[in-house]
Image (cartoon, rainbow, N blue to C red):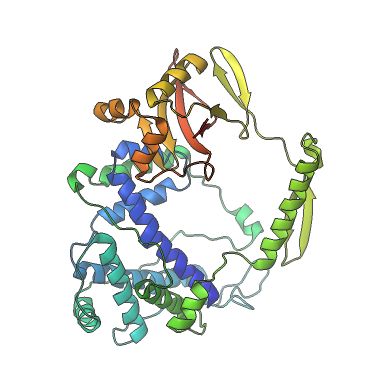
Length: 430
């Protein structure tokens, strides 16, 4: 049950917190700015755009009835369709390449769940998830628990649940040998970018949704609404796999103390890390051969070490000369009162580059896509003040936080070509 609770926690985090935060970021700027903010998340940006599209598209609720319908369809997706697809790919009589039954030993086959409105667990999931969905979108809910359950029972009757159709052509390798034998069909960056542009075109513009802001929910084990949803999601997952369920009190105790790693593995990794840190502390100028990459698999068990490669070197052309740097390099800015315009001028005079975009975490501070009015306003502000204004959070002050880490995209002033450039470390106090 500990594993199903961790799974439920992660699902809650993605649906009730991460997706609303991504939607709010999209609504705060322009579609182009949002896409630019995902430039450093090549493996994730397609998934982010799909979740934002779904959150703002046809599934965006305007009533509690819509929230109930969404929760009912999530039940079908998580506990019926996904399981049916898995069993379609791996039938109960499937054999591995060695002739052994695929579903054997600790690998138990799951069973899809047929929704039953009279089952308290099924109804509890729909009620709890619909209530949280309504909270995220600011939709009103029935006054009391009895009224809420009555409304859910009524609305469920009108939900049209599409019939499951297994997806064909889905091939999942079960061994390394099978993975090598599968035909390679890599998805290129161009394919991802084209799909992202298509999804971006399907999104309503932020201007058409003026005033809309979602409310991300931070999981709190002491919030009964959160725990009812997580416990129901966990118990349904447990039913799928024939695992004993846990009541709300037990689930609360486990969910509040979940450590997302096995303790023994964590201790081993910490030990490996400390050994390498001791080497660095005792001899800072040690050759790279002194250090080791360590690999461990406690299940086999297997413990191996190898010499690390030097960090990859990036070569940029700055003012006509080659400049070699690695991921460990940075550009320090020790003048905390510099304005954004001062920074733009500094980059042009010192490095011969034009600042095209400046970001702090997932927040874009400056971009050539921005409106002229917004750009002119921010150019007059100190860079730390721009960060505070855009993130809408006060900056931790020294000594708690001495630096800001800023990412940037720059273009050569003469050719206009993009130039690879390390991050900026901005000192907050002289």
